[in-house]
Structure formats: structure tokens, C-alpha cells
Length: 387
Ligand SMILES: *Cc1c(COP(=O)(O)O)cnc(C)c1O
Image (tube, rainbow, N blue to C red; front, side, top):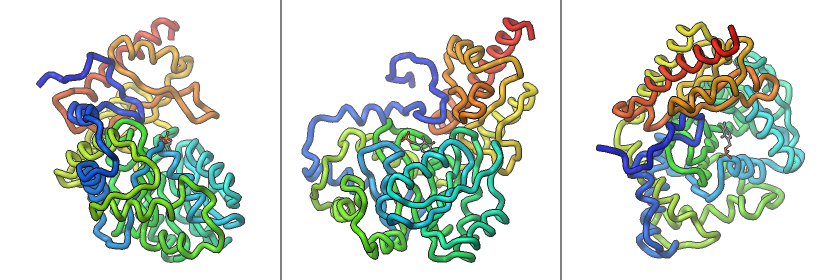
């Protein structure tokens, strides 16, 4: 079936990503009250679908869907689950570790960053040592750092934290992983996974999605000081989410109604099939991309296979080439990749996002077309530079 979307270059950056037609169409919904029964049902079901997305059946776990970008999730964590003067351990695998740390510091939280060299991740041994040195209220893990394409082993880190420092809340920044990397919220005993609508979930930008454990909600309830934010206050949103999910109208601040329709559509599509199947499809596509990168004689920022993300690939350019030498050639061939983001090496690499419908809707042929475009654009750029 031909797409209902205007012809456009394929957006293969690590979010926002390409949309399914039905997701976009569900946004052109007529005006409705945000507390009317029809919308309350869509919102309530969306919360239940978020539980499915996280493979969670825990009755104490609580999903939140709030208008805002992924960054709002950091503010929710920093202003509700830690207090001024508390200690937080931030595992740093790129740009997003620095930003989460800066957010925590904004609320007076004291941050220790455990930094790995570019393209690597802190080892379990290093994390264990750090956990033994101080008592941390919170540890944050960037599941996939979008600046480097480095994947963290969240399951093993969470098990380690439970063994060494059971009171520490395990917070996962899953903005670039939820919907493409395996996450089992209950089974891995996680406390917070925060994400955004526009990455592997395949919804337009504008929604912050946060899943909290019962332990995280208890932490909020036992604060000795009020939360440090009004809009981001768990106390203000918790009854709203609970009411919507039990189909009762409720108001704290107006939800982004059209985006919630889009989210409902995409999550219904995603959870209609086993999540394991979706993760396997992303792994397969990723393997194809990584093989093509190797065949082109290029290397990835994430050097070890076990620490390579499955929804994106960060690719070093041949020496002598910078992103502006290659990205226009890709655009000419109908493909949009992203430039580098890690500030120390941003001019040396490009990023290829392979998530969502570009992976699961194989009829689109997005991944193979992009690999072919990359080959041609690189050859053209090398020739132009006499390399
Ligand atoms: C994109 C991203 C964010 C920020 O999300 P916004 O929606 O841009 O606010 C945070 N963390 C990671 C890992 C990301 O990829």
C-alpha cells in the first residue's frame, strides 16, 4: 500500500524516526475534552500499554505519560527521587551522562560520574568498587548513549546494585533503547526507566514516558523535603495517572491529546506481537548494518560487540573526511543520518539510526537503501578529496 505521507528523505537519525501512516493519521483527531470519557479511555489504555511495553505486571509499578520531551524524565527523577545533598552515581558512556549529571546538580544532588573512555563502558568491577566507596541514593545508567552507540548491560548492573547496595534506586535512561533493546522492568528489578515518544517507539516528539517501581514511589513518599519541582512533581501526577487508568477523569495539567492518540496507536502496534520478536528484528538489522560498516573498512565508536547498541550505529569516517563531506551525499540519495555529537570527536563520525518501522516494516527497504547510499556517498566524498 502506498504511504499517505508526502515523499520525503528517509529519516535515519537516532530519533526522531520514521512514522507509520496509522500513527500520524491518529493525530488528525477532532477536538475533544481531555476529561471526556472517550479521551480518558485512550489515555487509560495507553498507560496499560506502557506496562506491556516494559513487560511489567507489578501492581505497585506506576507508568507516567506527561507532555514534555525525554529530558523531562531527568527532572522527574532529580526533583522527586533524590533530595538536596543526596549522592548519585552516574555511569558515563557519552554526552547524555553529562547532561543527566547536570540535571541532578541543578536540584542540589551531589554527583559522582564513573566515566569510561569514548566507545567503552564502565566494567562491573569498576561499578562494584564505586558502589562500595559511598552510599548512593540513586545510580543512573544510560542504556544506549545516543552520542556513542554504546550499550550498557542494564540487567547485570541492576543485579550488582541489588547485591552491593540494595537501597540504591536503579534509574535507566532508556530514551534511545525502549522499543528496540530488551528491557524486563520487573524481572530485572529496575526502579525507573524513562523514555521519550520519538525514538524507538515511533511517535512524534512531545511525550515523556516514565515507569517507576513501587520502591521508587515509596522513596518519593518518604521524602523529608517537598519535591523540588511543581510541573514535574510525582505527587501532582500520581493520582492523575491512577485515575485515568481506572477510567476516571482527572486534571492537573492538560495532556497533549493528539500525541496521546499517536502513542496509543504505536503502542498498540508494538505490543500486538511478542516484545522478544521486536528485539530480535532490531538485532538482525543491526547485525546487517555493522557487517556493512566492517565491509567498508570503517570502525564503530563502540569497539566491542557486546557494548554495541542495536538501534543505532556510530561510525568513524575515514581520516580526512568530516560529516559535511558525507551527509549531503546521503541526502542526495534520500537518506538522512546524523553528525557526531560527542564533543571531543564530533567532527570524526556520523550516526545511523535503525529503529522502529524502518526495521520492522521490511517492505520499506530503508536499511538496505541506506547501506547502499552510504557506500556511494563515501566513495564520492573520498574521490572529491583525492583520498
Ligand atoms: C534523545 C535522548 C535524550 C533527550 O531526549 P529529548 O527528547 O531530546 O529531551 C536523553 N537521553 C538519551 C539517551 C537520548 O538519546
